Image (cartoon, rainbow over the protein chains, first blue to last red):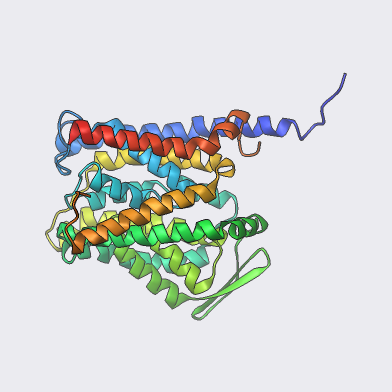
Length: 353
Length: 36
């Protein structure tokens, strides 16, 4: 009778068991809590549950609630597989397919943008991809930008056409970024595997910050990080997304940071920026400008429930997914959609997008 | 089989995003036909 070695064959069972436990004790409660919160929010905001029979009052559209959950699930799943947040994809889908075109789309998508990456934040913290010194300055910029963005939405981008132009530009940028990543992916994934180390602050003096990870080091200017955070935050919260789609290409171009280090900045940034943007839409704007762009809370919470589940599933499936092909597909679709949105601003298209 | 990747997950995961995208397109068409 053979006796199995103590560690190796038992490991998969233990890991699969821990994933099941994580699903049962973290994912299911969070998803259920968000669905219940969506139902309560609908009753509190409208006095009934909108959906397939009764339109969402602020959105002005009829759509079954399972469809909103599904939108969060599929956008959260596919975008998390390529290292992106669901917000920008969900925004375009809500506008073009579900025809949610009123200004409330912006804070509503911010609910999804805020809740979607929280699970990822906890995961990256566990793996050591966490450095408050580097995230702090971008996040402080995001605080400022997150407060300015809603006022941009209220003024410059209040009309549907300029807003769609902004969405189109954002989609085109993300599409190009995904396509570029598809061609560089082999090199990046190798370096990510090599860099399985903590992100350390080597020097934090004056306006400079030196960080190190896996034997490499990068010097960053705090003022540059702050201004980048503020600028991206203003555009992100004007759109209703966290801003990762713009922050990642800027930081890669300016500092040549690898994806392994970038997530230590972008994940907390997206949460901070979306939270501040949401607070500004819901509380500050009515107080300061006496203007009201309320989120469709139940819509955002149902989408976030799907988004949390999708992002968790993506984290588990990521190693087995052909990321190169997926990046090509999503990048192509996003770039084409973005180009059509931009074209729609300048010329009349023969179809409605 | 690390991080909870069971045998069935390894088999279905590679095709899952493409299945998800096809279902998403089908649901979008269903919505356009019946709700718009």
